Length: 279
Image 1: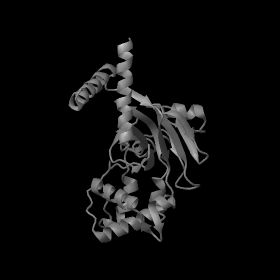
Image 2 (image 1 turned 30 degrees about the vertical axis):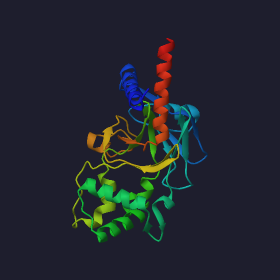
Image 3 (image 1 turned 90 degrees about the vertical axis):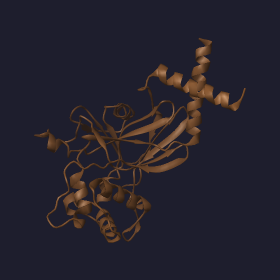
């Protein structure tokens, strides 16, 4: 049989699998474990309540719409990792610490510049080299408007809403966060704006999670959120207030897909074909 013919049959098999399982078919993260770092679960609907990171709570929190698992707390106390696998392919998610953002003396890492430049683009701000330096300093320095914490600390404790594989290979993470992140971005970019100028309401930016999928590592974050339908905090008097509360938005990001995981997808197709033949 020719290689072209084989690839054609594999492609047809993938299409058949997708058709049989449906576009919404997803495989949840298995063999989940947590290290001994700082962790908290948030469960409930529509108002979330803080809970421990027991196995049962983590399992509930990682269900779509079931809450979230918070890894770390403001970049303090070392990293917290959440691990699992998809059919034996390991996945590790972890919180961030200062070393992810700065090499010392307010010197940014590549992640810091990437994050700030991405946020500026979403906010419609054109950063000159001097502006970028000012934004970096603001991002890495304590801010009275954020309770004395530096902005980087606010985005270093990712809240994991779900982790799932779709269509046999694409792995997606839901990051629970603030639906309207304008107040946070104002703290970062305020010095680049004319005095008294406020950024437009409704800007969005997620927290950051470090991922390791079958040896492929990256930092993931997003700039577009869907309403989650839940929130943490007192019952808000109106929608505008609710949007600025924790976990009112869900940012979905996709883990860069290593070749080995793509092969896993083909393996699942082969398993499916074998089962169909034996049926």
